[in-house]
Amino acid sequence: MSPTNRPRTFDSHFRRSNQAYLKQQGDARPATIRIGFVLLEHFSMMAFTGAVDALVTANLLSCDPLYSFRTLSLDGSEARSDLGIDISVSGALYDLDVGELDLLFVCGGYRTPLLANRQLTEKLQEAGRRGLTLGGLWNGSLLLAWAGLMDGYDCTLHPENRDGLEETCPKVRLSRQPYVIDRDRVSCAGASSALDMMLAVIRQHYGQEVVRGIEEILSCDRIGEQPDRPMPTVASDPTLPDALRAVLELMEANIEEPLGMEEIAALVNLSRRQIERLFQRHVDSTPSKYYLELRITRARRLLLQTSESIAAIAVACGFVSTTHFSHCYRDYFGVSPTQARQNRRG
Image (cartoon, rainbow, N blue to C red; front, side):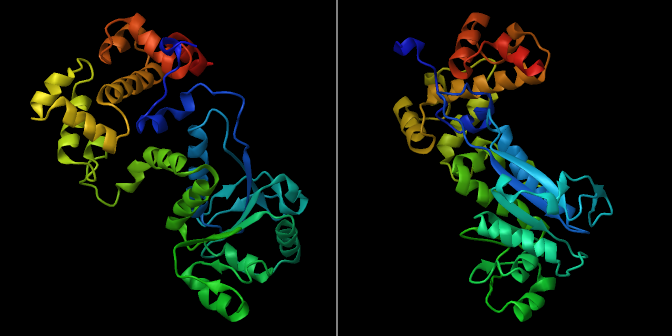
């Protein structure tokens, strides 16, 4: 394949934004990791959905699903959450073949009746023997500890249940951290830490790049504690030098009519070579390639999220013609804009 026909790859952070739309290279596909959630009565809905949100968002970043999950109750009937909302489940824990899972989580809540259950204990112990990673949300790790599956492990759980765990399971190393991962045991202490716990699990499975992509998609949720703070962009990253942030802001503000590099250099009082060094050091890309990736990412969003014509999108994103836009789009995503829109609708 000649250099001019070689597919382009994203160098910058835009690779995370576009990961799910990139053409799969070769035959290598990630193995889907299978997770089960045992929903105890009055389980914490917020803890459960926080953990699942991370998994579902991870799947959005891949052409093939990174995770599958199923919900289970003890007898297969609906599980009532702490909000009084009944949740349909995939099946009964008693009927579960644990060999069909890679991880199994027990989801508790503030009002969950914490009573030893022989069938639950036996199923959890079987899962432990089969080598599954086991975890607890809120106070779910207490049920794992009662089954003897947390002895010699660090774990955490909701403060309301700490005394009971210390009294009944002295071999468990109780942590005060919001979440803990110790080898093949995972636990979190409450609703707010469930998302962070699952992100840490995903990081072990697929690396930091996938986690950054998830955090980018879910970033709006993190801003709620500071309502006056604007939503973050790359240009607003305080860890970047002011000069580089000024260049990035100019690029983001001039997509329809892209600025030339000499013009950008003059506007920020830097030489072109100085700008190239900043991009190489902090963005791991060249200024021109970053600018193109910024525009092609915006074009992809408009293409798949609006009914604007391809010609209008090409103009809005600074491409000199629909032909130029189509060539660039195919270079990055392996399909033409027309094919991409048809695939999305299909």
